[in-house]
Amino acid sequence: TFRLVELLPGAASEPIACQLSEVAIGTRQTYEAISYCWGDPHDKTVIRCNEKQLRIPSTLAAALRGLRLGDRSRHLWADAICINQSDPRDKAMQVPHMRDIYSRSQRTLVWLGTMEDAGTARISLASRTCIRLSIPIIGLADRRK
Image 1 (cartoon, rainbow, N blue to C red):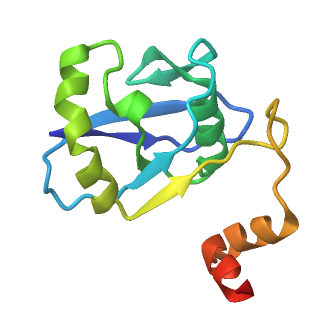
Image 2 (cartoon, helix red, strand yellow; image 1 turned 120 degrees about the horizontal axis):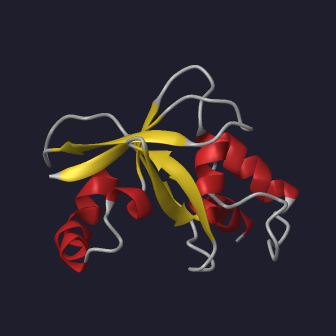
C-alpha cells in the first residue's frame, strides 16, 4: 500500500487541512504527484492532517497553498506527508515504490516556489510562458540549433 493525501478546499489565507488515506498499489486511483524542493530541513510549517498537527517542509506548505482549490478537494501524493519521515521502516518500505507512484499519477505537478522565496532566481519570461503553456523548455533549445 501507499498513502495519498486529500488536500481539502480553502482560500489561500486559510490554514492547510488534509486527510491521509491508504491505497493498494495497482488500484485505479486518480491523483497528482508533487515534485518540489525540500529546502532548509529545519524550516517547517504545521498543517492539519487527519485532525492532528503535522510538521512539513515550508516549501511543501507553500506548494499546497498554491495548488489548493477553493471549491473541491485535490488528491495528491507528496513524499513529506505520504511517507512517515520519522519512521525508518516506513521510508524503507515506501521509497522503492516512488517510481510506480510517480508513473501512475495523472500528472506530476512541479512546484518551483514563489517569487517571494528568499534566494529564488528570477524565471525568464520565455520560461514562464513555456511553463504556463506546458511547452518543454528543452524543445526550445533544440529549435535554436
